Image 1 (cartoon, rainbow, N blue to C red):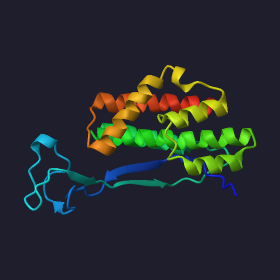
Image 2 (spheres, rainbow, N blue to C red):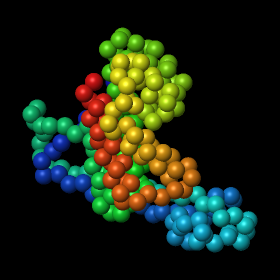
Image 3 (cartoon, one colour):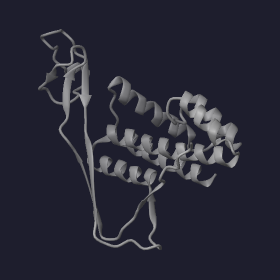
Image 4 (spheres, rainbow, N blue to C red):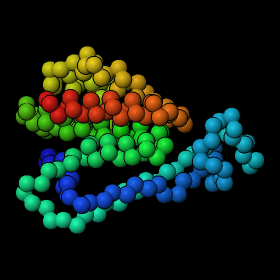
Amino acid sequence: MLVKKPDALPHCRKDTAILSLAAESTACGNCGELLTEPANPPVDKRQTFLKCGSTCRRIQLEARVSLSASVTLTANDTVITYPTALLTIAQSLIDQGLFDIAIITSHVACEVAAERAFDAAYAAKNLETLGEAIDGLMNGFNLGNERRRKLYNALTGTELEKESFWSRFKKASEKRNSIVHKGGHASKKEAEGALQSAKELITHLKQL
């Protein structure tokens, strides 16, 4: 059974949004014991953990978003989609100097938008059941993944790789992978570039 996902958040006037990061923790990447050093220092500045001799680290971050509003919604109120909300959070993270997390958040926004685009493409061809089966065999909705991109192109008749934003999106996707899987870091310029390419990709997906 295909379950329709909610695609939007209500937008209220006189609302507030507070983004905060909860406590960060750093653990030894080898034995898992918690460490007291600053979270994720550069590799060349890490001290060897005396118990096991490792310089690998496992970082845990927790982001919290608090929303509040004091106005009654009406039928004429506009809505903010989940991808748009995530892009707003990414901009806030950039403003706070949290460039690595900003890139990850921008990428999540793209994956949410891509999932909705795939759902729409399957529905347009009456292939919802097939779509569920295919999605179950693939890992996520990252259009930077070649198999996902080729599937999207086949379903929609487009060629994502020929769009003006594509090379910048791919570069941002590679930076995201470096941050998540290799402990890489991003500059403000890279975070801003990732956010801009995410906005362009999401705009493109909405037009189809």
